[in-house]
Length: 352
Image 1 (cartoon, helix red, strand yellow):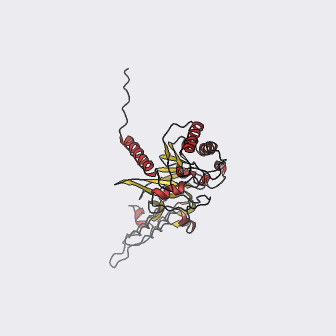
Image 2: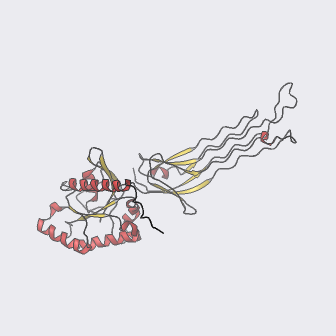
Image 3: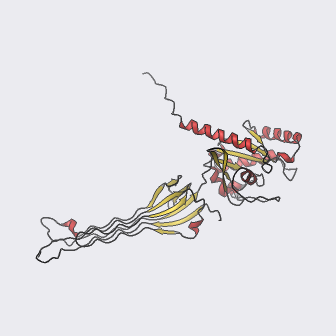
């Protein structure tokens, strides 16, 4: 299925049922009085998170969603039937914007999470409601109100723990294919990933994390060049970035340090906050260069980037070093989760 991460839809709550103007008519009851029931409330439109969906492609086919109207009230004080809510399944990780105002309505991040996007109308009042000591036979009733109508923009940001960052053909797709069940296209000729891919990486019993592979970045991506700029948003939810560098490029004249610096500049242009996200350096294709050249290129790269964090040397194709990388990532994520669970340290008391 084609990956789609943006969609425009229209949602509309149902209309409330009209109240009834009715009078009791029975034999031997000449003055039965009013008995018109209220109209039923209309259904509302809800967006519901569904972890089994990973694309907004379905919204390219169906774009309008309307909840059920409420039924009109009836005699004998019968209230009209309420309309059913419209539940629209969306991927977990969907941001919902009002298309006209660009206001963020909500962020659906969990499976089963509900977000009301169009409230249904209220049912009208029957004439029984207007009965009083001075008005014994009211003919007044109120109609149901219309439901809300909105045009929405849906924007999907993948929910992943780890994001792969790098130039086209750095080996990101090969890595996620090697360590997870994801099967992005890979080949022995240069091309770039077109759609993001998610893979679950298992490193032991009940120990796993989600890895996201997005299209590679090129210079000018933040201004719209290439494909990667469209999908940089998917890295914004990740907790750790793996900067994949092809240590054995096809063209030996490629300046690896300059490429790495340009990529970080594009990242900073897109989102300074994302550029500050924790990032590990991963040197891929170590099996394609001799150890001396690998050490030389590693030193040049670290000096140019002024990088002092963890460095991993791997071969995604052969699987060399990927196990150690995944174990280190899992341990780091568990440490982050443990730190988040710890209670905040109490502030030092200030004596007056």
